[in-house]
Length: 123
Image (tube, helix red, strand yellow):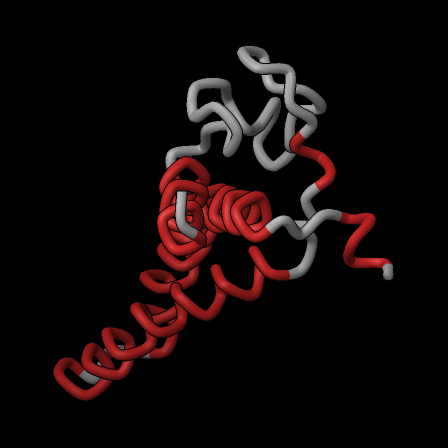
């Protein structure tokens, strides 16, 4: 398997919230808690660092998709500030909370494909 195809496989499995090793077991035991061992292949997925990148990627993606619509709504309808807050704050919160596990899965899958582990990151 080439490096490029391995990265594609890891990213697809991560976005599917599946174990990057086998693609069948669940990646998370709870909302954002990476399972200690895959229930299918027994792989330890906690060795892949995924601490800071998922929130950054989530905020980057949500911000780039939402901010243009916020500006458009402000210019098109000129709503009161409380309406803007009432519409956008809950929407941004929900989209962020839904997107975060997928970004964390993506980072775990990418780390698996590139061989980055917590031990290799410390060296």
